[in-house]
Length: 317
Ligand code: XMP
Image 1: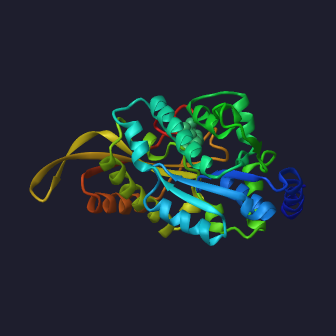
Image 2: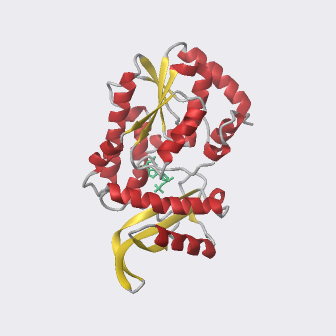
């Protein structure tokens, strides 16, 4: 059976001999996989590891600042790059889901390329690829495989001639979490819900503007904070809010309103390949709906997504 401490010990020794005194660049996403990969590499080669954490402007509310602080606290050699405007520019006027993913993928590679050039003589690219990603990029499936290609060798431009190091390549997600725990990584970080690379852009149906992103960040924060407050966060595999491209009529005081509709989604799953909608308690849904409508200006209606995968997908785009 799998023993995290033995894995850590062997992997560190292996990384040391493989990398020697060369430099590694690694893109952190705030997620479990890239974080655990970074900590392993950091243990093996210390400051020869250079991490880059990009804000694409499509993260959750305050996520960039909070996660960056957490990384610094863990002793990682990390550079935060706020490229929000660049991503939002690249997304301007695009409403097709696959075009959004393409625009984000390209911008990500450009930013990462610019930043990694500043790290002179890096010869390795570190990645948090795990076993299901390896399988998935072999059997190309739907939309999610497309963007995931930028995480692996195939998606990188020819001129970034870096050797690839992927210490988690043979592990499943639960093993990655156990490895992380055995290295003392904050359990809260290890228990975080998955979050898609294209971020909130695929939860804003239609075109993306800064105003829509800010609105959805507020709604999402009310929902996610609520799940934590009510002890429901760990019972859900993934959750988020979706901003619909329609207005609906409402009433506030004695005024008629005509404002946005948001959908909430919470699913149970083990690997994201199939998923069931979670039967969140009605009292919770009622409280969250009230909070969202009262606190977030511009929203007058909240709906709950009761579709499972298949035939629906987890994301709406
Ligand atoms: P779907 O919507 O395909 O989502 O049921 C399955 C899981 O994959 C995530 N997802 C993505 N992750 N880039 C990513 O890195 C993507 O383009 C992408 N699309 C979906 C989704 O959040 C869920 O966890």
